[in-house]
Image (cartoon, rainbow, N blue to C red; front, side):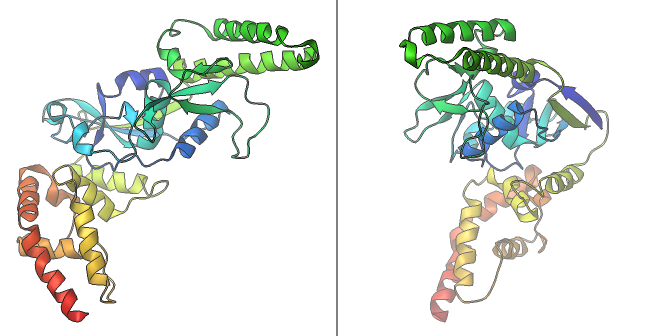
Length: 340
């Protein structure tokens, strides 16, 4: 297992080209508040934990990152069949989806607003003086409108300003803000000390932004090299469950449903509805119980595991379960009605 630093720019350049999400990953679940906190942490130079990748040529369903964050996406739209094929080298994110999707959306993409409009990230380059009520020191905002200075469109760092240095960007911003200050009525103009303090914050902020993007010291990767070494799918699944035991918590059943969803996107919702029906009889079942019953009916044993839904045999099993779902669920509804 290698352990190496990398720049955010390098990560962004590889996303959806060589770096993908495996089908076992659930959808992006962070709220906008969590995205803003990650940016604030990076601007404060806080560590954000190591990213865990898996390089492989195995036949594993590969999913793209979202160019624009959707809050309830249809995951089937993001799968890449050609990348998923055996023999195609790709790198999967086992731990770090929420962080990487946030950074990709902030520095190179966008999020979707309530009316499906594109909202891009803008940074208040004068922030960093006082902590907000939300506990944030540095102010980031997603906006469908182009915001005026002191706001800076973060994606410009990988776009029109990609070749510019932090000193040049900060001087341009400060010169513009100085001119705006001088245009104010004399009694409203900031003091010399306040103006100097603002200039210092702007220089510091651009310095940190450029450093985050271009320097190999803020982001660290641990990589499981499944090409040079042998990592079975079962081993990787076990690692995935363990590394996702914190944060947005996943358990074995979550992992299993994630492995099934690409073939039948509504399966977890269907299983959960059936579980609720069963539990209306005051008997406590978890959502793996109906699935275990189906596995027994289909001759696959009662153990519910992600491996049973992988490969050609897994696809056939899932197709059979989907085709027979109404027939299997009917007796459950009848039984529950009789109990009530």
